[in-house]
Image (cartoon, rainbow, N blue to C red; front, side):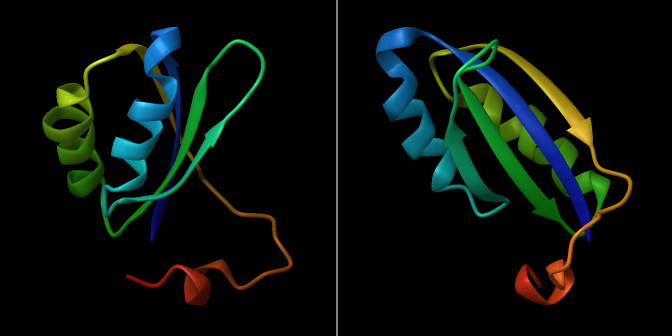
Length: 89
């Protein structure tokens, strides 16, 4: 299981619409509207980086209103929860 965090800047009037579109994508497990430098944060859990690459290049790029993205890959989870069983694909 690979986890990525996608930070997004979105046109102000489209934040809710963009968030709803992203939340409907199978690869994205959570979407948060946040304060600070970014408008939305997406948590992605996929089986391999090819699926992540497809999500970024074929799906997210089609969502109108996103002005900038920054994607981070998670190396290791430090959690008391069994994340693999919670988010098994």
